[in-house]
Length: 262
Image (cartoon, rainbow, N blue to C red):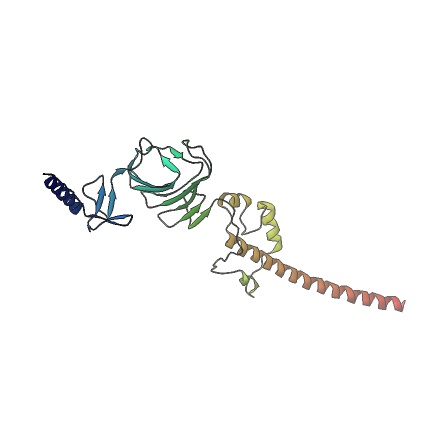
């Protein structure tokens, strides 16, 4: 009877193990099944599919699925196709975001295809996050914003840029000022324009610069153009001065000759 009971027990557990196909290799456990593994779902669509939050409620109640490995959290928010990979931070399922251990970071992939990177450098455990917030955003049109959530250009930076050098591609430059057919603006007309507008011709006004910002490439091109025009004015002035000096020397010579006769 005892042998029969042991045999039945062995057959029962052998059947379970064979059906589950779980094996051990030292401290490792593995499964030979080539299908998908589902947690919370009977129809896994990938090697590992997790349906539902693996984290405690109510903090994680706003997510259709989430997973935590140490301090790293991967969350799928249930409002729209949005995925967040976070460290030390969580949402409450609504608009509030909470910090765990005094600091946090996050990469958020939005429903529109954008990717936002956030850092939070201060806060109390269980309290709403505070700090620098969105540090960098890669928009779905390829625009990159640093310190800006909605970049409108290929690179928008809200802050100081420190670089050893900057190379700007150009379509033209201002050397045409030195061509023989270039008409140098009349200085009287330039003076009249300055009196009326309080800035140089072609150069944006202070109000325009404050509103639209400084185009570094265009500003340098215009600056060089004005320097080259100024150089031509100086050359012309120097020529006139030399002519006047020559006339004065001839007049002095004639005056001295006249005085010797008397």
